[in-house]
Every structure is written in C-alpha cells, then in structure tokens.
Image (cartoon, rainbow over all chains, first blue to last red; front, side):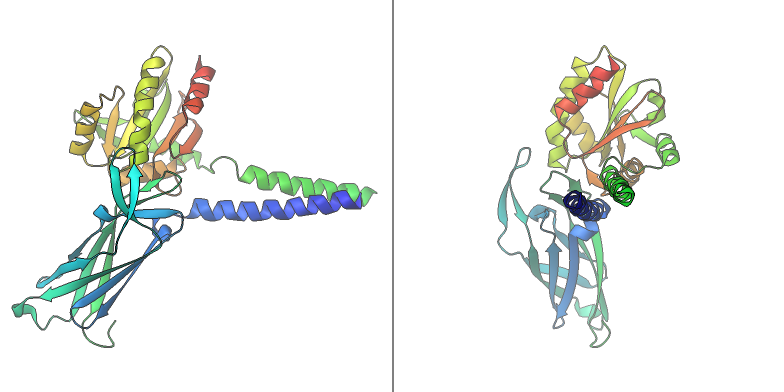
Length: 150
Length: 169
C-alpha cells in the first residue's frame, strides 16, 4: 500500500505542475510573447530590441516604425538577416525569432532642433508555431533627447 | 488502514480536479450570451448578430486575412458547409480585419457561408467565448439556444466538425 501511495503522490505532483504550466500558457497573450524595448544612442541613433518568445515569430514585412512627433522622422532602418519561412498561403516569407535588434536613425528637421523627446510607434505582427496568429500590434515608445530624462 | 483509504481518496480527488481543470474553457455564461448580441456588419453592410442564427447549431470562426492558419482552414469550412447543408448547422465567419480585404478574399475564394466583419471589438467578443490568448483562428461551437458547446484555438481538424455534425444528424 505504501508503494501505491508513493506513486499516487508522484502523480499528484506531476498533475499540479502540468496544471500550473497549462495556466501559464493559456493566460499568456501576444504582449507576453513579443516584448519590445528601445534605447536612444546619441541624439539620432535608435536601437529597438524585440525579445520574441521561443513559441513564436514575427513577420519581417509586418514591422514598421513611425515618429509620432512633428519634426522627427525615422530613416535608414537596419534589419538583421531574417529566417526563411514557408507559409501555405503567403509562400516564402521572412521571419524573426528570439532576440531581434533593429537599428534606425532619427532625423530631426532644422526647425525642430530643440526637440526634447521622441515618441515612436512600432508595429509588428506574428504567429506561434502551434498555428495561432496575433493581431497586428502597435507599441508606443517614448525617448528623451535630454540626458537623465529617460 | 482507514487512514490509507482516506489519503487515497484525497489524492485521487486532487488529481481528478487538476486533470479536469485542464479540460475545457472556464467561461462566464452571461458573457457568452451577451457576446451573441454584439453587432457586426456583413459584407452587404447590414448589421448582424450571432443571435440572428438562434435555432441553428453554429460553428463561428474568428479569422483574418493576415493570419495564414486562418486561410488554411477556410477551404475546409467551405467544403463542409456544402456537405452538411441539409442539417441544422451553419458556419459563420467573423473577420478581425478590414472590410475591403475580407470582401476580396470572400469573393476570390467563393466563401459560401455568412461572413461578418469586426476589428478589435470582434477579438474581444472571441475572448468572451474563451479565447484567452487573443489569437486567431479561434472557433466556437454553439447550440441552437446559444449555449457554448465547445471551442477550438488554431486550425480545426475536419474530424472535430464531422463529429459535431454527426451528433446533430
């Protein structure tokens, strides 16, 4: 009887862990799978980093970045080499997984040289390997051009 | 010995509870009912609700043209809608998308069942049915009185729809 109890206790532990795992997965959503951060390097160089969950990927073509501040424009966006991915409907497409670092320039017009902050809209869309896709998402990031105000 | 049996019963109850907790969505029935009253435009511009199809079994598919797995399963829905045309069951698509893109897709692919169009609000409605990850495709199985029978996240296997149809026959 002791052996049976030990085995049942082991089963109990396994079930509790599987329940916890199931809850983590079902409670996660797109924001948890694609975490975005950004850093302003110098006054006109911006580095954005997506940490993409191992379950998921981002379509390269879905990525877009726009300044929300008059007088500041995003230019010269440098993407790393993407992975090739075959979609039944979209054919060969480029995707990113894991850590994605994107560099870009911020061009500030002559009339706005005293601009103190930048607000950026970063758009992405991705799917999970288990065949679930997430709504295109806009992240708004704010950066200060003045040291110590970030 | 009595203590051993009590311990057995307690452990088995906890195990059963844990396993059952993994099965099926935890759903607020009132939210499910009110979700069926939400209005979406169909492709002719008329406002429709899921409750307009009360009296029929419904397979409601949330999808979008930007979602490859969604597009993968639509030919199956078209074929099965035709195959089961003689039973009290209908497919309804709710696109989380732009109406023009949806119209182009529906016309090109000759989608033969009703398609409604929403945006973020459509996704929120899918969440009321248990789409906790807010992902697409997401499919809901409703009874004629609007009771939520089942849901499926991701591409629905044909066998699941056939089993559903077989129970209706």
